Amino acid sequence: MTLFFLLIMLCVGSIYGDIPTCQALQSLQEVCAQGAITFVLNAHADDHASLIEKSITKPFVLADINFESDVYFSPTEFDYLVDLRKGDVVTAQHIKKAVSYLFKKNKFSTISLTIRCCEQGNTIKIGLTSFWTFKKLKFHGMLIGKESYRQYYTMEPNDPFDEIKHQHALEKMREALRQEGYFNAEAVSQLKYDNGTKQIVAHVTLRKNERFGVADIKSEIKSDASISDCQRNEAEEIIQHHFLKKLDGGSYSKSSINKRTCALKRKLSQKGFIHVDVNLSERVDYEEHEVILSFVFDLHHKKEFIFTGNQFFSSERLLDSILEFGHSAWFLPSSILSDEIVQAYQKKGFWYVKVSSCEAPDNYIFEINEGERVSVKEVKVKNALGEDITKQLK
Image (cartoon, rainbow, N blue to C red; front, side, top):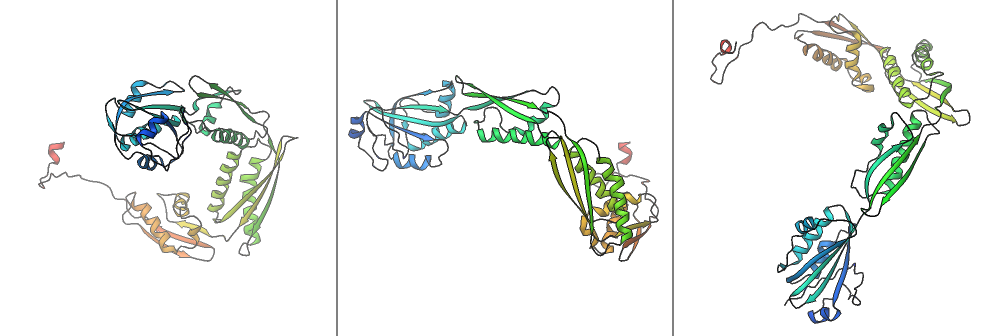
């Protein structure tokens, strides 16, 4: 009868005596004299395979195998994953495969193996200790809209429960509520543990409390030397009329501020202010339930895009195609921008469009001759032999 030498660095002790060090390989008589050897493998260790290979140097006959688990685990599934039967000749490769498949269930935190010598060979008893796993999330407190906060909870059912992820999800929910103006919002949880299944149900209570309003808006406009007083006044009027007045006195909403900021930049770009930096700082008054907004608008060189001769496309549509280049549109030669306009027209059937451009320090002028739009007069279909089969398809 051959010996099953299975000694791992994570030796935790034997129920029949002290376990030898992992470095020492024992004889069959020494192992049998101790009665049994038990060792534990941790799911987070990454050296299972190498340690098993070093310890199991010879095959052995499996006299019996069984398991116990701290939660229910189907014997049929265990047999399928381990794939070891009484009378099998077992090698290190078989043990590595069995341990690997059990850990891949992502259910067990530790796996212990107890090996005993007997007259028929060696027996293996596998002990399975499972993770506490996440079962489901239940919301309380809010009647409407609470499901939209589920996206911040990243754990899926049957995942090992992670307290750090759980707390991070709660903080993300609080932050989402603050972004909507609920700066005193609460997101608290209570975890329900099922000792029978080692599953956790997370009960999360959301309370919005009072929504904060925008109490005051302060603004400052900066500009470089290229911006004239007239241009500065023009930009200031746009900012005041299309942006600040729409925010003043309303409820705080970060998404609304961001949308209005994008709309403002678009409006300014249409007037030639392509490069505008908008910086926002906020001060929250928790006693008065108000937010004070402070904007700094930084204007850079103005360059207007002027289109003439265009009928099919509006000037705004042509400007959009140029603004896709972003701030770099300033630095591109007019020939490249003209090519972009030509491509836009050709995609719509204006194959003979002509675009000439003139560049000045403060503007680009594009003169467009759209030409006649191409129309489809006839369609012919040919097969692989080049034969006209158009009539056959009608």
